[in-house]
Length: 140
Image (cartoon, rainbow, N blue to C red; front, side, top):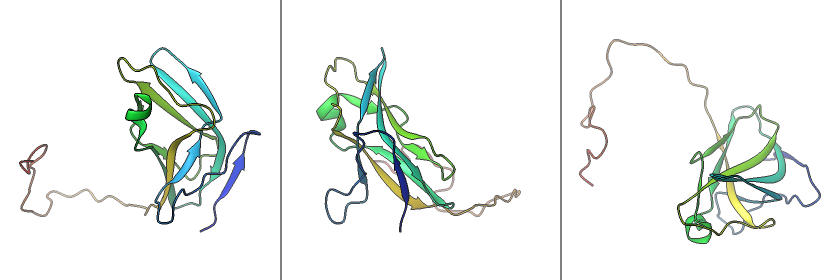
């Protein structure tokens, strides 16, 4: 699948897979802005996702051990109509002082197909073994 990207700054890096079989394209920071409760990293990249696809932005798996950050919105969603710069906002964990540096990999982009869903309002839903059991219902 070919996807168009635009590099918005001189130090922007084309997102890339680190290893064969990787699901996510690594994304690199081009600038950093620090705020009292969070840090915002620009990537210098915008993307043109085809209609029917979504880009999901995830933190790197080493994020908390390396930086003491958590991704502010857990998972970022890039809709196919968005053409702005990809950015990451991280919240600081209490007591953390380390952070990413410009030029480091800060996150991953996974592109997936998204079906168009039509919702039907009904009076009842089919029964299942689980039913309406929610949080912690599996006993683990």
